[in-house]
Structure formats: C-alpha cells, structure tokens
Length: 117
Image (cartoon, rainbow, N blue to C red; front, top):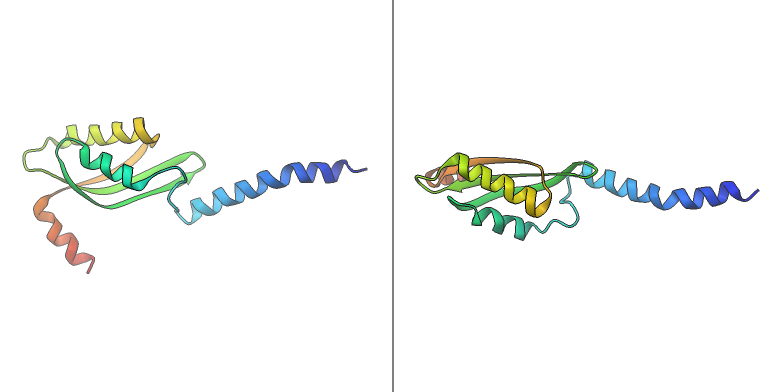
C-alpha cells in the first residue's frame, strides 16, 4: 500500500538532479567543476599562444562539455602544433573532448575590439 509513495520518494531526488542538469544545458551555463581561470591559464601556457579572449564553456548534453575561445598566436607559431597542444590540454586536464578555437594574429585584436564596442 505504501510502495508507490516509497518509489516516488526514491525517484524524486534523481528527477530534481536531471532537471538541474537540463536547465544548465539549456542556459549554456559553465559546467560545474570547471575552473575557467585554470582553463584560461592552460590555454595561455600552450606553445605559441600569447593571449586568449571570448573564452566560453558549456554543456551540450549530460557529460559532454565544450569550450570555445579566440586564441591569439605569436608570429611564426605553428598553428597545427598550437591546436594539438590546446586540444590535448583540455582533453587530458579537464576532460573536455570537444573544443573550438579561432586562431588569430595579434594585429587582428583591433578588429575584435571594434566589433565588441
């Protein structure tokens, strides 16, 4: 007789957790457990990187975190090597398997600043 109530009480906490995850995904909130300052520092530590802006992280679906950023590379930097280092860093240190980086040169920054004014 009390079994439907017990079952409901067992299901209710998981329901709230799923609703919270779904809401965070829909709002494109920064995933829990990802320290954006650490992510930014790892990006800046990659070979050839001199700056980073427009850095964002969000969850596409449960357990799939995504990062995008504009990364300014030094003159003469190897873009392929820089991209590989960035992706490996995020994958290894933050368990982020999907990332999108827009590589830019330092002189491109002035155009970016104008578009955000």
